[in-house]
Length: 258
Length: 367
Image (cartoon, rainbow over all chains, first blue to last red; front, side):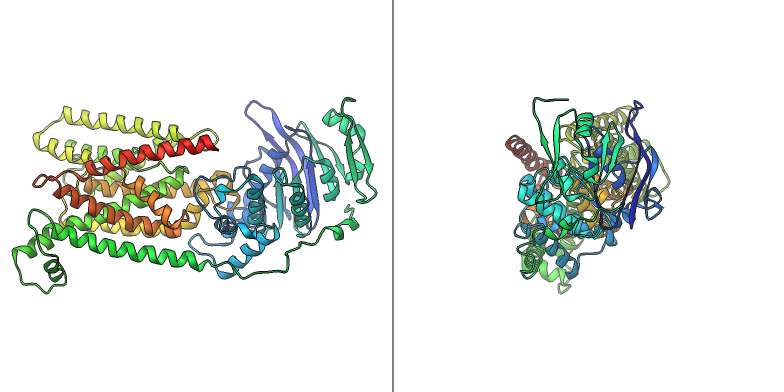
């Protein structure tokens, strides 16, 4: 299983390109990070990949099949994500929200089987939210919600996991747990991440976006350099390999803006 | 190209991974659903018997049961129960159930618990079209049992389309204010249109008939006109219950539903047709009865939650009970005057709506 984008472009009406001819690839078992400053096009790119937006140019391919030709449901069987607005004003339980992840595998009139309930239960346990199963989703905190929606993506049993800032509401413990969990799934993972140190630790490769274009890509060690951070983010930073993790660690040097 | 690090093995084992408890008891919610359905069925039976017994002629409940089970001799009571009151009770139950189901569905469609076929102008669309057919004699020569429901359906569908388009925010959301403003505006335009048709081609008998559309009442119930509304209600409700899963998906928003594999545009079109069909056909037989579709889904959600597989059947039964009781009250509180039941539902529904609105506001402020 391999996810590929080919010159993926998303142009808004004014003619500005939020995503500009991005080609990237993610293989099964690989975790690929998308980093870049706010407005660099990470979210737009991901939304094109998981089908919330229709790209204005280029293609998204899954094992060579153009996803534009696949139906919404067929796509949802292979690509899972945590959408941005998971809010609902209605009182659904956490269990019901997670069970929705089975929908792409069901005919619309089919109910959930015992096997589905088992999947839901397991997924909730894996994200550390089993205790929330009977609670009202609308009343959870931001972090709890994020873990529950991650469980829903697991229940979808996808080949590709596309996550936009999967850790932004989470306590550090859950940040590490969720990223570790995602890494161990064997799926092709494409994640947009804010935290460069976390990205460097958990991702096999990184793509750096700036102004909708890929400006650098490769293993974190090669991509994350002081020069790149100065150029893309406009900050002075030191990148060193951490002795315990073996991954690059970014230290920002406030005041010394390059 | 993979820089396969050793660090994968270092990820901390999940502490609770192997302590797999039993699957939490889903059965409890199932039991609750069964209990609620059983209670509501009993309540409907009791309400029906009461509605058959009470009225200008008071008939003992025991006699009603005898007549219903076919053990009674022909008598004036028998005629009153079977030919006068029973069709009215059946129509009331059907209209109540249908409005509750449509209200529930519309609330999912716009993701807002303040939606109702009456408030959104869908009922006005249906009655305006019905009035046009009656007064202007469109489709004359065809049976009115077909032309009026068909026109109502078309009117309901168009009104729903317009309100939906007006109320929808650019991002796809529906705020309460926009929804209500759009509904009210469309209702007013349609009411004005209805008046215009009347003024231009008024005939005394039309006026009375049309007043009945605007107020909503079950007084016209007769055996020979029940087949269409009962069939449409049964089919529409069954289909919507079958669509429980995608209806649930609508609750998490456009993007959420899309990434879970729902073709939202297509599904929305199907729901538009189904809800307009049920609303149109019911309004054609009872006029526009308001607020049932607002109050009942709300109460039903408090009993069984927001998931539609349980919610829709409960709302249907509850709506049936509610309207049978409301119609009984409408017939008896000012006897021998027969108050249109729509007046009564508006009297209770209006304050309820204000309460919901207020509660929603305090909730938004608290958030």
